[in-house]
Image 1 (tube, rainbow, N blue to C red):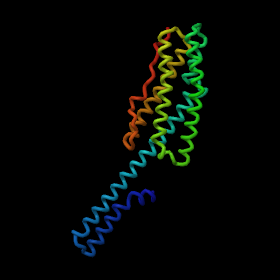
Image 2 (cartoon, rainbow, N blue to C red):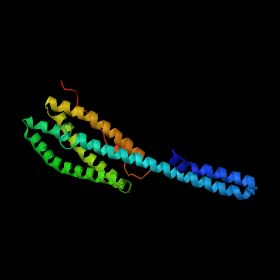
Image 3 (cartoon, rainbow, N blue to C red):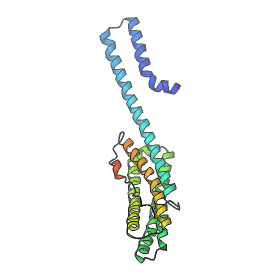
Amino acid sequence: MVKTIINWGWCPTLITALAVVGFVLQWPIEAIVPTLVVILGLGLVLVIIGTRKSQLELSLLKLSQLAGHFNRRFAGNSPLSIFAIIDNLFSQENPKIWDWARACGMSQRIFDDWFDNFIIRLESDTRTRKLPKYLYGYLNELWTINNHYYEFIDQFHDIAQSFEIPREAADQYNKFVMEYNVFVQEFQDNISELRKVIKTGIEPPSVKLARELAPSK
């Protein structure tokens, strides 16, 4: 509380003190008013800077949380990973689907290594308070990672629409879509918040929602 008063209350306190002293000592009004105006202006500038810093820190924390959630729920060995869902297609008697699923398996290893490295760097810079310095790069990298990930989601949806796939795979995919789209909405909101304080170069709608499959019969 004392820190808050010191940080935010010095300006009105100083203005009040100078006004009282000026009244008691009968300073000329034309001499004291410009000084009070300058102090007020400086106080407003510092308030704006402090507010922007607070908004930036909050958005940074949200970005770090989003990346951690993505890593836990949609990457690695998570059963909700799109790659885990794709593995269900190996039960199909369709060589074309097998070839595509095998290619996705190879891509998964590259993708997981990339995202693991991203999380390590992000967490390290968060602990050392260097994240604001690299925010633009991390935001763009998470956006790029998600866009590549979405390509596998979109391809799976197209295959599921063109071929008959196991019911368990379709149900697992729809469960994945529900949770993934919550992440997308939060990511879009985070980008909108960040655009208020920094230049992101990214539009919220560029993070796309996954398409759900029709219910199994």
